[in-house]
Length: 282
Image (cartoon, rainbow, N blue to C red):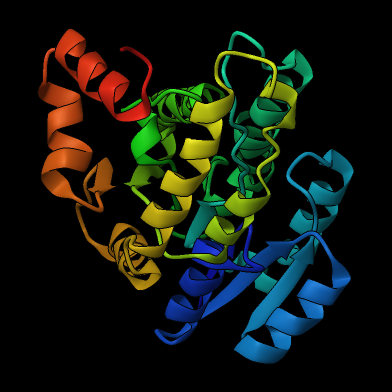
């Protein structure tokens, strides 16, 4: 039996990755924040799924979850840790409340690192570990490489996550633990339904009011036509099992316009394309 921890397993990528790995013989520990979600997901996914009740910003709850996992797996160790939990804060940086920016980083960066630090011993980051080393899969985003207006906080958190992923991968060579980044574009998950509730009220008296409303429509449209969530699960499985996985997997909704052109066009040219699309220039 192989054991994997997935954070943010109540819906979306985390939930589907748990389902996908369970079907391939893994025992999955999945973090959720509410007992009701823990009960629901365990009922839906079966006895080989163990819910862990913690928020990635709650250090004490993370430690409790590590103890729970350790008691279950014994000397078998973890085959993988999938850092998937996260949030997306949006807004023009000129007006964004700094507490919102701090919370974005607290969840998407500090929380991921704290979870990783706590689970590393179970992945084999100890001298003479009694089991093969596990792998860390960090779920980033296209925004980890490509930044769009109003997504500065989210993109900053993903850029930073990719930086610490590179550092960790090199530091953990001493233990044989690999770190792989997966950067999806828009994925068909329930998170896009929440875009409808994006609060643009704080910006209604700014020059960005109409553009923020337009952004909501773009988010909803992209999400509903996005990558099937199972595609991400397939890549997570490859990253966990392939003998020599890539260090980073990009899963773009549209390879040319959504990944290649934004990365390789001259920056000023891409600025102009985005500006015209969002009405940032006349």
